Image 1 (spheres, rainbow, N blue to C red):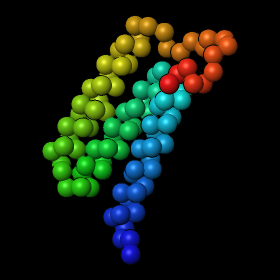
Image 2 (cartoon, helix red, strand yellow):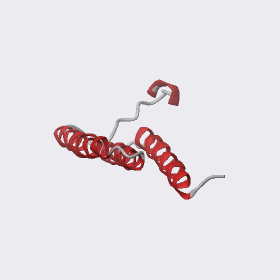
Image 3 (cartoon, rainbow, N blue to C red):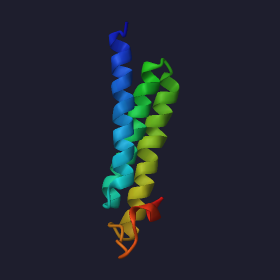
Length: 94
């Protein structure tokens, strides 16, 4: 039988997968960075639920905050939207 903690862990994993898919598929680079930061934030919550608070704090600080700040700084110095080339299919992005 599944208890409530396992349901929350499954929900966090599903939210991480959805955020990762959004981070890959969004054309707006700033929105993609927010999706990437959400994946790191959900990972830090998962680490906390797995009773690893030190790893959770490091993931939240470095994974979500610092890397998102570096990416936002880089996006401000370049173009915000990814350019769409004509004639290329979805497989080219992979």
